[in-house]
Length: 145
Image 1 (cartoon, rainbow, N blue to C red):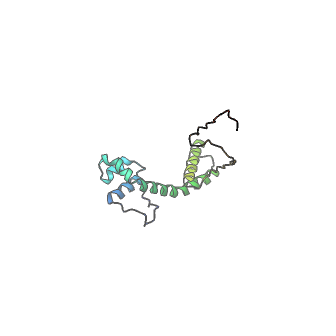
Image 2: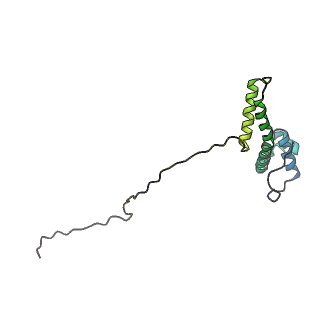
């Protein structure tokens, strides 16, 4: 299953045929990098290089895949409401948690909000001078004027 990248056509960099083949195989084989590297015709020693160089494209296609499956995830949640007991509870629970995770990752599920409150206090801090203290000499003459 090959999914299009989410970037606009003006932002999208031109990929070689081998790179496209690698990305398509990676998405269709469930993320097995070694198999995708071999299928695209790269040497196995190129595995690290190809994944680093196509990092952004892999992330874009993964986001697209999650967005596509979010509809299925939402459907699973709704179906679990009408469960008739034919699916074992532990299997239903696992499917429900998986569906919730997918929806959270695409931004449809629960959202966390953090409220930050702070008190700002104004004050003056007196610091010593940066200059060396000047030596003050007091001359005590017992002379009367």
